[in-house]
Each structure stands twice: as structure tokens, then as C-alpha cells.
Image (cartoon, rainbow, N blue to C red; front, side):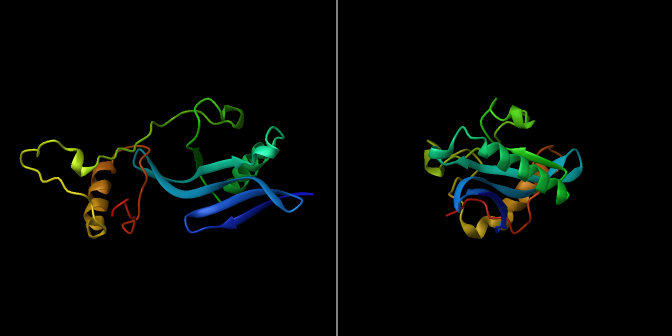
Amino acid sequence: MENIEIDGTTLGWQVALRVDGEAVSGLNIVDRKVRVGSVGLKTGGMAGVWTSEAHRKKGYASRVMWASIEEMDRRGYHASILYGIEDFYHRHSYSVCFASPICQVAAESFPVPVPGFRVRTAKKGYTPRISGLYQRYNEGRSASAIRAMRWMPNCR
């Protein structure tokens, strides 16, 4: 017997396909508000799509993805975004649209100080200032996430 389960998480929700009680395929939906021009859209970011090795090539991941898209429609999402393998999810109507926006540099990797700047590792106490910089830098940039001020960047 197969069934689809949808459960809430802190950042969004999960979808899993169970066969005879065993979770065989699933994914997470991360709730995001994303800018397109000056408009904020409610989007669901599909993440962590998986199928156990013993159950691949049976269409389970497709069923989970279609169930997720239907659920996002029911919940009033404007769009879903899948950060996945290029040229793999086109059969689910996804196409490549954003480049990866992540850039991380270890402070100790700078060989010499940059004139006029101090380089140091970010700490949790810097979060409000980092969040403010992120908001100001991205406020006019399409496809950037609209982050709450409580957002925690990856700080030590």
C-alpha cells in the first residue's frame, strides 16, 4: 500500500511517499519570499529530493514531486523553485533560471589586508548588520530571497 504524507517543519514542510509503511522517496519544501522586480512572491524551494536506492526507477520521486506541486498550488504559492541537477528535472516542467548565488571566503585566506578594510570572521553578534547589508544590497535584485531580520547567516 502506498501513501503520500505531508508534515510541517520549522522552515517549511516535507513530503514523503511510503510503501508498506517504509519511506521510499521524499523531499522538503522550504518557504521563501523571492523578489521578482519590486514584487515579493511566495515560493516553495524544493530541496533534498531523494529516493532510496532499492526503490529507484519506479516513478516514486515523480509522484512525490507532482504531489508537492499540487500542494503548493493549494497553499497559494506563486512559484516553486528547485535547486537541483541541471537538465534533470525538465520532465517535471522545471527549467534552469538562476545561477548559484553563494560565495564564501574564509577570513584567513586573505594574504594581505585590503586598504581601508578590516577582515574578520563573522560572529553571531554581527547578524543584524549582516542582515541589513544583505537587504540593502539585494532590495532591487530579482530572484533574491526576502529574508526576515531574524535570519541567521552562517556565523561561528
